[in-house]
Image 1 (tube, rainbow, N blue to C red):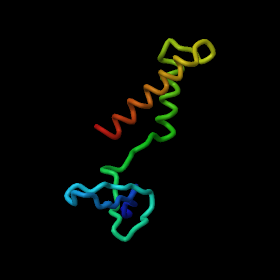
Image 2 (image 1 turned 90 degrees about the vertical axis):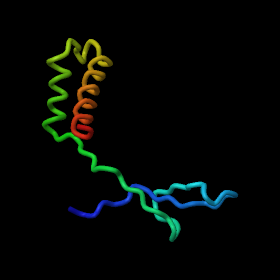
Image 3 (image 1 turned 45 degrees about the horizontal axis):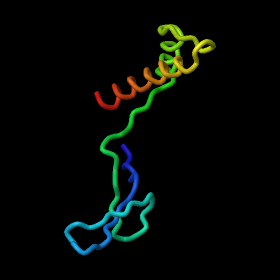
Length: 91
């Protein structure tokens, strides 16, 4: 497994109370004292088959038809994808 890359960096900016610094965030390491920030877990997306299953769910397992109610059809498609992503990433 390759080393995970930082998502962003942060560095402290001195304030009157040194125990409570103000944090500044950047997407690149801009200072030598910048601290890298990592994701708590690796994101798991959907593969092509799972996207196809979401399409089939919206198309054939709901009462909505794309040509009659595209908004409801899209909501059914999105809800299915959201549920699958939550299942894969949060257990």
